[in-house]
Length: 217
Image 1 (cartoon, rainbow, N blue to C red):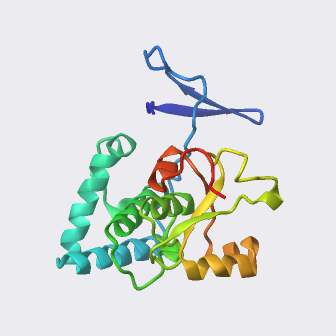
Image 2 (cartoon, rainbow, N blue to C red; image 1 turned 90 degrees about the vertical axis):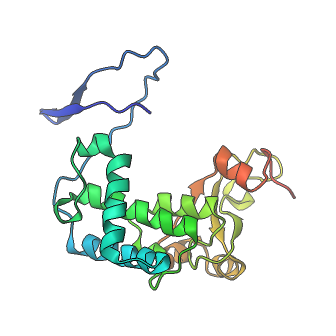
């Protein structure tokens, strides 16, 4: 993905985004517009970020201020274009920047198997990114235990795993206990209780779980 700067113009109920097209021959005509929330980060986002950094700091055996400096620099390197050359500071971050920072911290915790006092599904700002990280690390998106791939797209919903490719099917990682709970309570109640939702399977997920395009019986 190539990022370009743009400016929004509103005219009689229509929103235009004016930008420049990069000089690259193989660009798609489809674009993604990401709206940046310029309001200052909320007190709840500040609490989440520091709670997550405290968990990382305790796991690594370092002071949380040192962890903050380390992760702020990592976030700055990762999102240098979005920050427009600024060094990331949580105290002056926008809501969008704080959300992305929290998402990065959650992904670090999932990838490294760091235990947390609060469930990560309550701490994450981007549910889809969180569930995807859990899928790629085979961690239950509810409790963090070892998980298997749970197919949300079922035959009853017009999806036959025996005859259709799995790429694009809705999946989520659940341990055995929460897999059984999902089936006993139903997807709607389960989602309302834990605030998690399935994501479409892509090739990376399929490869991770040894799926070669079609489901087993």
